[in-house]
Length: 160
Image 1 (tube, rainbow, N blue to C red):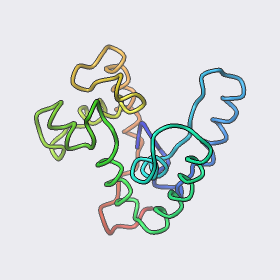
Image 2 (cartoon, rainbow, N blue to C red):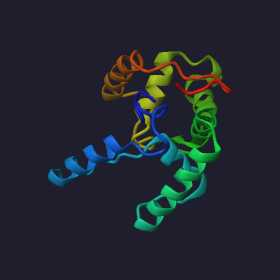
Image 3 (cartoon, rainbow, N blue to C red):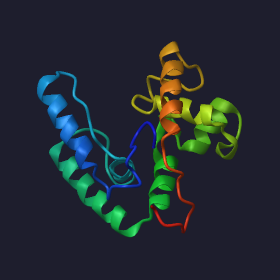
Image 4 (tube, one colour):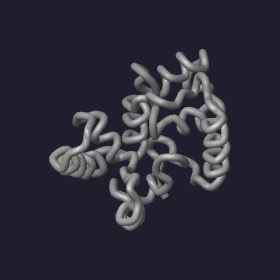
């Protein structure tokens, strides 16, 4: 959440504030910034294809609405963490934990998790197994942001 969607627990699939900021930024910058939430990324990863098109984005919005309606935040996060690409041919937190850290995802440290999160903008380019200086710096930024994140509710707990 600290690196991908800091308001995940507070929105219903779409972060309007992040969308507005991305639109403003993209009007004046050549390199575009996205505003996809964890819910939107989950919808794309599970139900759709990679790539960019208005059709895919429209279907993504539809599926995002449905998963937010029918799934808990805990379920959305579980599916997200089990479906996201975290390296070449590596899908899911357990796979990256085993392949890059030789341990189960259940025993990853905060530092390990932050390093994995640092790869997510470009998991085919960045590696948590052999982190570059940039990745180490990004891990530090994510660790600092993690201090301000609310505790993730346990399954069955209400999101506050």
